[in-house]
Image (tube, rainbow, N blue to C red; front, side):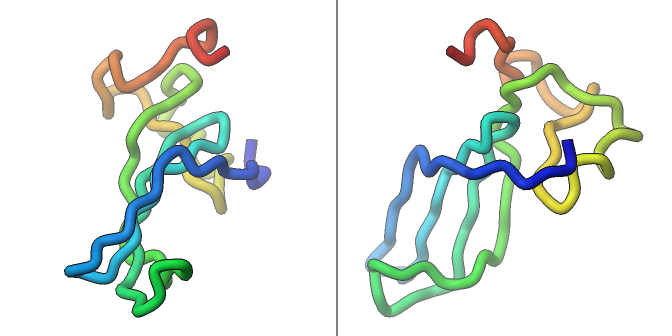
Length: 93
C-alpha cells in the first residue's frame, strides 16, 4: 500500500483524428484507463489529461483507506462499484 507499483499496459490505442492515446494499465491492484493530450507523434504520448477506474484486482477497500494508496490510483472503495468490477484474488492468476 502506498508504494507505486509498476504498471503493465494491457491495451494502447492512438486516434489519428484526435491525435490522442488511450491506455489501459494494470498495476496488480487496480486497472486504470488513461486519456492523453494530443500528440503529433503516434509513438509518443502527451500528458495525461484524464483517468478512469476500470477494475480492482483486490477486494474493495474502506473509503477511509484511499489515502494509503496515494500517490498511485487506489482500489475502488466499498459501495462505489458493482461486484463484477472487482476481480477476486483467486481469479487473478
